[in-house]
Image (cartoon, rainbow, N blue to C red):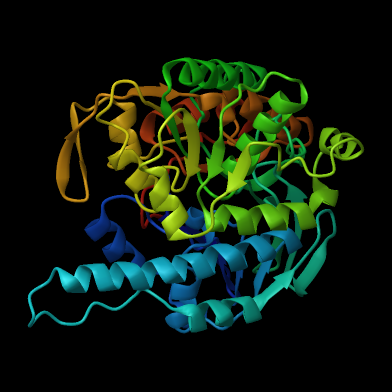
Length: 464
């Protein structure tokens, strides 16, 4: 069996890992590369997995860096099955249609700025490609083994990362021998609201694990609520604008849930809160439909609060006109808008009207990849470029990393102990992380493995 790493190898975005046997070719995830526009587009246009020859795709969850290029794969000729959980399917449909619209807008934007004789710029994919992907999806609930062929079976377990996210256990026969392969997808944290803790699984012959925060310890979630209360109270006192870049999927729902908890406890400052993202509104509706797979605490809250994603003073903004009007609003208020790394979407407009004023606050609540506007804000660049204009960064920038839905070093250690308790790991491959976090995770994992863990780079293949 051969494994080739075609994305999220030596970096965080673009998850794609190809498993090949003498009979099967299966792709784990098919995510978007994110970062500098020209480089990301070049990477997303190219497939190195021979899409027409794939027997199937296994989708760990519906974040764009894991599912975002499935329509591109379909456009390139893939027509096999795509396996995921029911909630992941519903979220992926919303995410991919939104991504399709972004591709079309980006193509128009680029075309307008190129020379008249430049060849047409085409979107990476369109709504028809998304529809084709949705027709390929086959859902599998958590906890059940499914035989996909005489040589391949799989089981999804809750990874606790976002709604529907899965750890994939695979049993694969190659040349008469069965091998057990585990792919973490993105591993979640313990003790966060809404989601269950990650499920611990048995050891395996091959482990493919993410490592985003393998070198860090997140602060407790309760600290996040207190920090949010503090920031909002100060905003009320200073009549400040607070802009919170947040991914529409996962991070926004968790943030609103925390604010709702503060409201229910009588601790939320009196300040208007706007969720300026039609996509967030759609995904929140999916969360409501799949509330049965959320954690025990959420189920208890439903007994006294019929909608934990709403509270007085919260408004979901729909139209562009409503969004634009916020840029001229006076007095203290909060805007939660996508994208979480500040690379696109309505949040960029809000930042344009926020960052020059030292009275305003930008709250970063998640990982900021290299070369993104979010990373530049986090690193406190003196000036940043927004809409081709250099603007001074005078606003306060707060980073609240405790809202990350990724496992930290302690979560990984706990989860790896579960592998070690039952046979351990033969070989381990560490992906989806920057160099320091991947190296730190290798040290955590090495005592569980028969061989030293490997940190593969893009395009590397390994026989296992």
